[in-house]
Length: 96
Image (tube, rainbow, N blue to C red):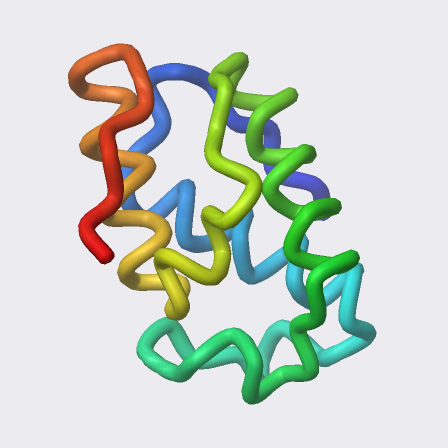
């Protein structure tokens, strides 16, 4: 089931959509994806990271950093960042 995101997405909705995107892109069953494990554990590479970031950009209508999935290496961190961005309306600088 494809989840559609909006600018009013909740943390749970964002997390579910990220799991869905990872599952589709990396061919990993969504049931096997944990919110607190590094995305690289599932085989995330630069092409998949850019594809997922691009999909999130399109669905949320935001400009997101190309390094987003490296800067936010878990679903939990990525959803936290996106919730913050949506609350202020523009991407924020990610701490190194």
